Image 1 (cartoon, rainbow, N blue to C red):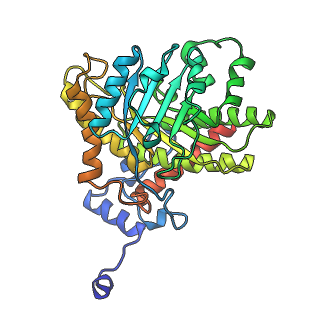
Image 2: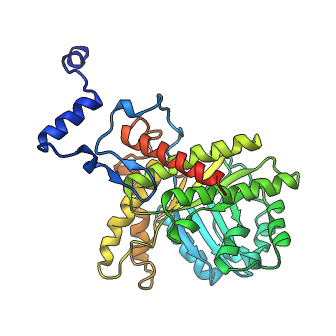
Length: 363
């Protein structure tokens, strides 16, 4: 192997450019540079010269929880769907609750201590916090991580509904009841933000909560839960998740905190089509790959017919199986930060992080 390496000399970036211009018969190299909507250029190739420093993995555990997203309109129906998902191989549940419910009925025969769970609630479902006090925010005995989150995100609800539920002070005060800080960054992706805008605004969103809790003398012993939507730009989305880890680390430095981070991802609806509905499986698969390669801790793949026709056991089962293929056949959960050291992805990660941080500081 040593002889093999010695027989092939590496090429410099200048030599590659020279060869490209020669092969393309004198074309201006700058014509090959991709001008992105994120405010930075992407070159047609990258080498080690593009890395400013030796890169280390940004996360050490690539295992993620396979989640089923469930809108809770009827508790019994939602419970049956949750049990079906767990029987089909899901290891997590993502509930959306916007009204007062019977939590006991919803969770019948579901062992929260053995799975990841998030309960995304509005102000009309605050009772869920009390109902889940036995599990919410507790360290899971099986893997030593916090696995149950009750997410109520006042700024997300303000943006979604266009008004405070009561008033700013009272709505934000719910943060004092939480054992973690929840931020729905995917809100901005779904609204059409560029990748840089999404991360900059998401960081500002988190900073508002850090600042509020700091003023309340309650910025301690927290964990962080971020929810993202995964867009179809494969490599950029990988870089997005990696860049956000860098950005939130910088934010935590400012507040002298080191809270553990959980990143949940969900495939987007923005690129899905009712005209070629089965191709949505291909779209969600590449989006799922971006999320897990980028370091998501949990992931919901929406069924291929989500939003276009009534869901079915088949479409829900396929969505779960897509993730099992990524785990059990592609082994994407076996390597820590797969893209670490990639000249291209590392360069894009740094560009996104730098642009987003500069934009965040301008707010």
